[in-house]
Structure formats: structure tokens, C-alpha cells
Length: 316
Image 1: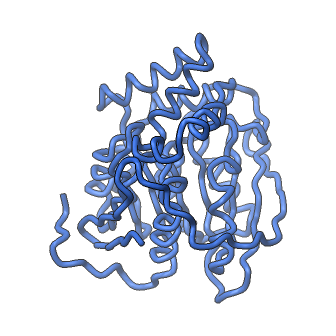
Image 2 (image 1 turned 120 degrees about the vertical axis):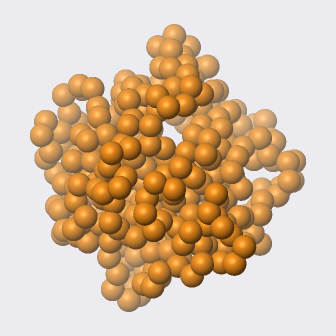
């Protein structure tokens, strides 16, 4: 079983199978709990979100999960993760932000601030804070801005495979530019590019050709997805990072080919007092290393004291 060490100032590692070995099975499949669908108006958007009730346990702040790029939204990102988090005693809130199929708006350009306002509205509509807030990929800069703008609403913040500034990395800028071009000219190529960069080489080889081909249609270049890609190209949240007051965990993915892990390390360095964990997986870490991901998140959001520094894991 892979292990993860957590440090308030350093890094952590998680073991994964070598290239070509079998993908580890999940330890269990959690039962689904009751959920309700709600809608909140934010500007010209009607934002849908789901509240998944906890399966017992001690009272705890709700855990809000903010999805990444793609019009499939929360269901695509969190479908297998939510039942495990509710089984661990957490009520989970999963918004679908503008650009997703479930939320309607005027179809205009999106910004990090627009999506952050939607997350804030969802938190307030769901009962107010403070909540524990987790953002993945595009959802990471959005969640960071939420925490910076409304520290009263966020108790703990988890940023997964995120970044602060697109234009500062020619690789990242060119990848998103390629996605935008493929999305309008070569939809099949778009799906193949997203799949190749979304998962590690070892994971793709382990699941085999048939499963890889089945992944390719999962994120088609819909108008909503391309609105997200356009937002990805404009991300710059550097001025927000020093205003984050929530206890923060940054999760980097060591084999990330979408958002290289150096961006997660930079977020950790920029957010005062943050903890950092690095998992040996590709971008979509909760598919490749679901057990490690769930354990890492639940350990952090249920720990009421500061993470204990681990000897030998100095900051990078």
C-alpha cells in the first residue's frame, strides 16, 4: 500500500506501481448517501450544485469540491470520490460552475473572479461557512481566490494540481493554446491530447489500449469546455496568494504533464504556513491513486491541530 508523509514546511512522497504493472484496486467501494440538487443565482448565471449528506460521524464543516476544466463538471471529477468522503463523515458540496452542462449563463468569457463569486454564492446558499474547500486543476486558482477574498468562509483549503500564473510558463501557455486550437479544428485530437497529458504514462500502459481509447471521449471540446480553456490561458492569481489565511494543503502530482508539479511547489512556497504533499501520479490523481488521494485529503481536513513536521522533508 502506498504511504504518504505530511509536513507543514516540506514535501511528501507516495509510492506507485512501476510502468506496466497493474493499477492498484480500491480498498473498498463506499455506499452512496442521500443528496439534493440546489440552484443559486449569481449575476447572469444559475449555478447548480449538489449536497451529499454525511453518513454519520462527528459534526464537521462541509467539504466543498471545485472541479477542473471540462463541461462535464463535478460528476466527471468527483463521481467516485464523493461516496468515500461522505462515508468518512463529511457532508460534501459539489458545484457545477459556468461552462458546465448543468449551469446556465449568458455564454460570455469567464474569469477566475467570476467563478470564485459562484463558489462563494454556493457556500452561502448551502448554509454559510466556514467550510473546507478543495479545488482541482482550474478549480485550484478559483478556490485560492475564494479563500483570499472571503477568509470568513474557508477554514481549510486544499489545492490539487493547481497553478498561479499561466503566462509565466511557456509550456503551460502553449499547451492551453494547443487545446484551444484542437478544440475548434480537431475534436478527436483534443480528446487524445487531454488524455495523454491527464494521466501518467505508467497508468495509461497499465490500463491498456481498450481502456485508454474509452477515456478519450470523456472531455469533448464543447463550447463550455473551450470557455474553461480560455480562462486557463488567463490565470494570474499571484496577488491573491499572500492574502490566504486558511490552513492550506497543496497537493502536487509528480508525473503531471498537464500542470507540471513545479507549479504546485510554487503555490506551496507562496502561501505562508501551507503544507505540501506530492503524490506519484499524473494530473488526474484521484483516478490514478484514489486511495492515497482520499486518505491525504481526509487526514488533512479532519486534523484540527497543525500538521507535524516530518524530519528530513525540508521545503523545496
